[in-house]
Length: 152
Image (cartoon, rainbow, N blue to C red; front, top):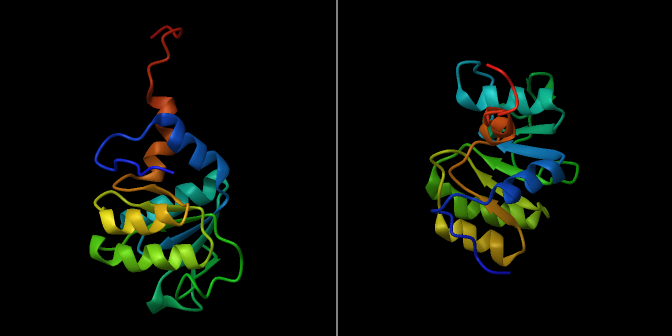
């Protein structure tokens, strides 16, 4: 499979297929702080029906929104479809390797999280990669398109 150009817009179908096909999402950098962007994304994805697994080494055994927090990707006790990353970009290559190791199908870097090396690691292992995007935004993008048949 060829490499995606992560500096360009992703094909809409590529993102739609990912969001339709994944169920279990491990969120690295999940936070219990309601003012944090990661909390809002976790909440929306959870309410949308995704099986969310918060990952935060400092919160092992605690809960965010009633969801058990795991310290690492490797410690998660169920298959993970997508690894979503709220971490610094330089941490992404190591995270990509962990995502590959646990058999994830998608590596998704949040807005601002972009690392070509990480993309190669994941893509070489057959994962789909999205970087510098927010799944919460992408999930609702279809609703923003002007519905031309509606009267305003």
